[in-house]
Image (tube, rainbow, N blue to C red; front, side, top):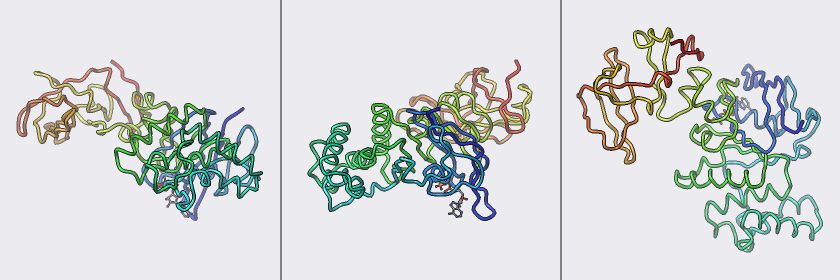
Length: 334
Ligand SMILES: Nc1ncnc2c1ncn2[C@@H]1O[C@H](COP(=O)(O)OP(=O)(O)OP(=O)(O)O)[C@@H](O)[C@H]1O
C-alpha cells in the first residue's frame, strides 16, 4: 500500500511517554495536519517519521517497507522548518540547487531540475535574486522548492508559519495548500493552531498527551467531535459547555453548543444576562451569564443591539447540541 503507516508507535524520553502507541495512516497525495496543545507529541511523531529519532516500540512503514533500518536520508522525506533558513548570500538558483550540488549530481542535471522546479513554483523570473530581495511568500516557495528538487516521497512541515504575522500566515497557508494540491504531494504538517488545521487539512489528527484523540476531515471533527477535549480544541471561539440542569434534559453530564449555533430569541430556553459585547467588525461576540454563573459566548451579527446588564435569551436547534458523557461523545436521544 502506498502511504505512510504507523503501527503502535511509542517513544519515551526518560519517564515521559512522548508518543503513546500511535496507529495512523497518512494517505498518499493528501494533506495531513497534526494538531494539539504544546507538548502533546506532534513534533516527536514527525521526527520519528523523518528518522531523526528512533522508535522505541511499534513500526513505521513507508510504501509497505519497514523503516526500522532505513536512515533519514534514504527515506526521501523533506523537512520544512519554521524559519526558511535560506542561504542569504546565495541566489535563488543556488539555493534551489544546493542539496543536489552537495550530493554531487552532474551540473546539467542540477540545472534541469532547478529549472523545472522554478517553473512549477513560478520562481523562474527570480532565479538571480538573493533571499533579501524576495517577499515572505516568495521565500517560502524557495524553501519548498529547495526540498522539491530532491523529489521527496513526502513533505514534513514543522510549524513553518509560526514566525509570520497574521496576514502573511493566511496568505502562506493558502499558498502551501495550493502547491500541495497542484503537485499532488503527500504532506504532514504540525501546528498548534486549530484554524490552520481546519483550513489546510484533508485529514486532521488531534493529539493530547502523546495520544491520538481523533482522526477525521475538518468537517467531521467540527460536526462530530469525539470528546470534550476535541470539542473544546477545534472551533473558535470555543464551544460552550453546560452542565447540571441544562444538560439533564438531554440525559447527559455535559452538553456543548458552538457560539455560532446560539440564536438570540425573544423567549429562548437559555435565559441569561449580557456581560460584555465584543464588536469585531464582521460579527459581534456576546458573552452572557446564565443563572448558575456559566458564561455563554454567542456569535451574532455585527448589528446586534444589546448591552451589559441586559436580559437576553438564546435558542438552539437541538440538532446542533453535542452531548458528552464522561467526557466522551454520546448520541442524542430525543
Ligand atoms: N529530546 C527530548 N528529550 C526529552 N524530552 C523531550 C525531548 N523531545 C521532546 N520531549 C518531550 O516530549 C513531549 C512532546 O514534545 P513535542 O516537542 O513532541 O511536543 P509538541 O506537541 O510538538 O509541542 P510544541 O507544539 O510545543 O512543539 C514534551 O513533554 C517534551 O518536553
